[in-house]
Image (tube, rainbow, N blue to C red):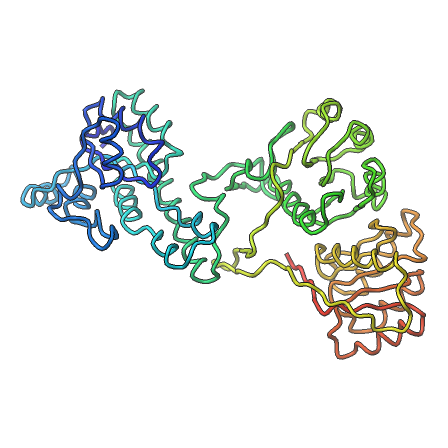
Amino acid sequence: MESVRPKRALLSVYYKDKLEPLARQLHAFGVELISTGGTGKQLESWGLPWTGVETLTGFPEVFGGRVKTLHPVVFGGLLQRRNHAQDLGEAQTHNIAPIDLVVVELYPFAATVHQGASEQEIIEKIDIGGVSLIRAAAKNFSDVLVMSSTEDLHELMDHLNQHGGESSLAFRRSMAGRAFQRTATYDAQIEAWFATGQVLSHTLESQDWQSLRYGENPHQRAFWKGRTADWFEVLSGKPLSFNNLLDLEAGLDLLSDAGEHSLMVLKHNVACGFSKAMDGVEAWKEALSGDPLSAFGGVIISGRKVTKAMAKAMDEVFFELLAAPDFEAEALEILKQKKTRILLKLTQKVAFPSWKQKQLLGGALWQERDQGIPEDRLVTSRPLRPEETDDLALARLLVKHARSNAIVVVKNQKLIGTGSGHVSRIDAARFALQKAKEFGHELKGAVMASDAFFPFPDCVDLAAEAGITAIWQPGGSLRDQASIEAAETHNMSMVMGGVRHFRHG
């Protein structure tokens, strides 16, 4: 049917405080309100008449409310086809009246998990009847209108007002699509909890897909699903792109490990500049000097407030995006002059879920976030100098966030060379050292870190030749002793942490 005017609506929501304006509107349009007990009592408190589901079915809620709406009278009312002779005949025979509108919001399963509830409390938040009602109504969208989240409440009310209490077929189809999207997300969260004890981020619940400018390349379409408001506020600039979001997550992930004074420049999801200098302007200059060529068109993540002085220095360089916890008013005036430059104010302390998901081969991989804590031990006779100890800790952190095979070089708490995503470790080492030399960094006294062990001593020899004095690596190779002996020969310090940090994508 092209246009449907609902005569009977089934209302059953967990959070009832937002429902009143819609309930009053439906009543004004002469719609009979059918409801389960809790929602019905709320309708009654607003002075609205309602019919209990048990009145329709002749059967009470049982098993502590686990079974309320699962009855042929209810589902027959939703699924009967209004233009189908057999359906109409059976509906008349069994006295099953049609239900034209369903307003159901699912139990807050993910939120219950995030609150640290007990297993039994979590299980009781697995919605059965609600999911079934939503799916039944959405399946029969040609005759039935479904609202599966109160996020859509005002849109639904506006549509009914504009159409004199009726709904168009296009609108019902759109709402049905959203309904299946939400039940799919809900099921995925439950599946993930059974598999891992975790759920997909609750920020993804009941969110619609947003169209992006394009994907990794301009000829690729791309969409994103999530709540930016839970992470940042957009202050200025063009819409976020697929690649902006990838760089932003990589930067915030590093920031969550590195701490609030960190300032970094990213290119292709990897830090090409990083500093923890206490002065903001100095931190920016040091981060930029790490690789000023790669910084062009990059993404900046600042763990500190951006001052006017920082903004003036940053404004001299072309970059796509800057995210920081706050900005001085004068800083925003400077940075907003370039209209396409994206400025983001971080809205909360970064808190990544402990499990990560990646889709591939038509399925999904789940793994714990890399939170391995190294147990560093000095395996050479030369002791570490205090500054080397601090620099190795930073190098170890940065290499964890680079792409395998990865080597990073650090000096004086500044990233000065990165080899990331190479097919061999010696190539990664050569590239990192070459980049440091290219931009005039003094390698004597610098330190190096590797994301995985050295199968051969060649990287140690290369590092020593360049002036590196200390190396961090996880160890674990059958040939560890060869690398240790090479370090001893070159009078270098070597620390093994026992934790590998492969990052393949």
